[in-house]
Image (spheres, rainbow over the protein chains, first blue to last red):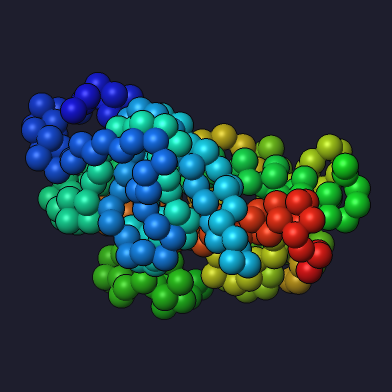
Length: 154
Length: 158
């Protein structure tokens, strides 16, 4: 487990040695091969996934078809929407290439919210940052596609 | 001006607040009124704190290639400004009142106080932000999938 990487990409601060010991016990290290399904749209939340290396593809089912809507790279997180919101997974996530993921299970997140609020607050802040970044990108895309459908763009 | 703490409990905190927490809100929350057509937030500006739409409806407009495009319509209960507040950066869209609106504003200075002395309340606000942003992103994912199918000639515009 690369704690320096987690400090840089998730917590955005130096962690205490105590925090690091706790995290080592809470995070699972997962490996996926290219094309392997990580999460299925509509399934129950599993936890928070952080992409340590590789890339994943997000697919959303619309009118019976799976449409690829995004590609996420190292440092991205997913699974957070259904985890914090309580709903089902809104997209399928497939490994775009061989990837390594760090997983915080639901149980781990509940533990941190109860006993390590500073760690769970950092994760929530990072979740908001990550969602905000996705929405900013989507604002551009949505404005473009709206203009396209109104016949204003080729 | 009096604020409706029961409404905030229901729409933002999702649980009953203690007397001390309710007092904190009464001390810090500002009530603002906007008339139809007025801008609550201007794209690329700095937002001072967190806005909660108590009454009315607003449109989100995003500038693309020199044109303002309406990308969403939001109703009472939504939070605004949380992306730039927690995520850093300027406002990503202009927010315009579609009807007369009442807005509860929690200034940044109040949030800094709460981060120090009312951590549970800040955690509730962050959770509500995640819920709000997640709902928006789910909706946008759906719209994007539809738009991509339309651009590939699979569907007619709705």
